[in-house]
Length: 450
Image 1 (tube, rainbow, N blue to C red):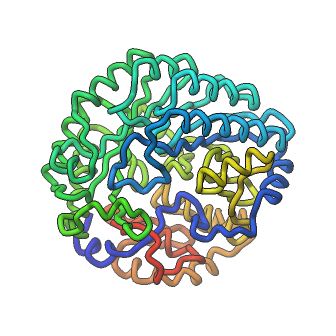
Image 2 (image 1 turned 30 degrees about the horizontal axis):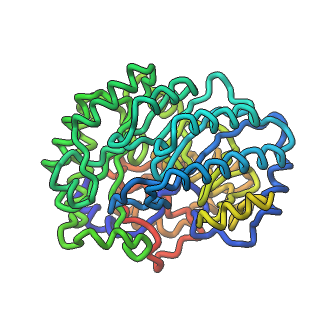
Image 3 (image 1 turned 180 degrees about the vertical axis):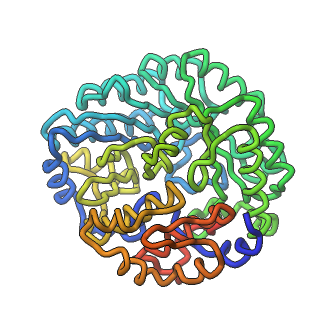
């Protein structure tokens, strides 16, 4: 990575492009009626992925950017899960047939905060209302500090085959500064129990740019993580947005690394993981060469959705739970963010859609270009535009933000093919943003590019 380019572009606030257009462009014009119509229009042959949002934690991690709340009473969680099961049944009824399911992802919050029997009931509901393929990937996000042996057994019996563990950093100074004290021993014990239960797909989430974090502490976290041999790593830059996430005000901004320090940390982590034999996948993922994600990257079939990079090839993502986002061929939908409003809608027998976005032909074209750039560090604009009935030359001319990137050597354009230079791939979001017709650089809605 080039430090000079990090200094020029690193402070830009840009989307992570897990969707296009991105969530800030969703509006109340798309509500429950539109979503119901879109669901009813899904063909019988369509396959789907399911995302279930569990917005509860036992304590707040101060870096967190998720929609979650702290709960002490399990009755609140149990009531929410009953609503979640009703939403699944209501959605299936609206579709009108048992849709095929290839991926299931539990996110949060802390999905494993629920009781083991409640998890089993939730999985049973999905299998009853949908046709969950025997080959389906079933993934759960996990806080190693609270995972029980009983929950692991429930996951095993329910067919879970991938677990994503929040690690962030093993540096105790950093951990105290973000209110997430988690020992290496706790994490190692959970990894051992998961593998003992036959759950071999183990992912680690790491974060750079945290308070008091240094290159040395990042490398030490990587060294300790490698000792546990996870299948994949996700490595994210901390997004400090205290105006949107008030609990982030607990973090002392004076001890946050600046843009160049974040760049050095990202470089150090990436280089260490690649030296250990992991394949870099797109912007922020790393996988063992035999992992399905690395294979998809090599074959050009890697996709991107709200969970980041994925092997999921379904065109339908059904989101369940408060704030959950779904994606259908017609557009995007998002549920009510507030748990009370979400539960009230489902109790009344209507979908909880609060806002969304109906895709235009131009949106679909730009979405395909942006996804290929994010997944492959390049795009065959001629091929993509031809499939959408558009001209690659016109698309290039409209991307005015490309000009300085080309001049600075970040991007190379040969004919209709665009490629991000290898030493500039950390700026892939800047390249993708050149094709974003909705981007408003004046609004500080997103995280820094580096």
